[in-house]
Picture 1 (cartoon, rainbow, N blue to C red):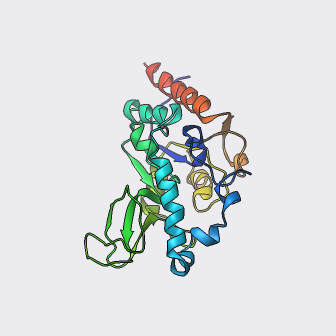
Picture 2: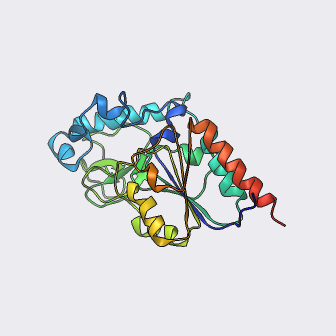
Picture 3: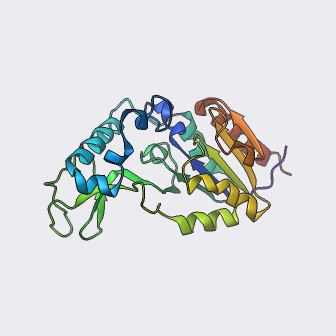
Length: 243
């Protein structure tokens, strides 16, 4: 079926990276089933026990850098869509990994931050970070010791890029949510915002229906490495069939 190209906003969650070997958060065996988020993912936790918080994220960073963790077919399909779609494509991700970028995507907004970056709590400088962080890590910008933290948006903090995301949704003709539970706000509210704008086709690609599945015009369910490439192929075939 021919499709008139218009801007696309894609929201991705942990489900898109699960088949690359990274844990999700809210599955019954996910990260929050193994550790209390109040102990490792809040500003209060970092003030209370920075060594524990650093240890948690150091472990996750080392896992992300494991050579066995690579972009999967879903990441590559999204990169292909960005390259070949005749209108702008923005990928907004809740994930803190870099698999979208490694898969070839260029326009990626990490609304919850990035695991491979560090931020100084004293001067606000951000920098690449592939090694472990600790309370003795020195900021390379201001020289402060003990102020470095993962460049992650913790619970109780404001996600990054909200103005840019809302502007992209306002200009979009399609919103696609992939591999997300539909329970974490503000991301869970994007589909409702898209519906309010009007004229935005909303699609859910997920292993199973999310909590907000009823808000989408259409849904495809199954592993991300299967449903995402298939749907991207449909979109691009529709463009090719235009006169």
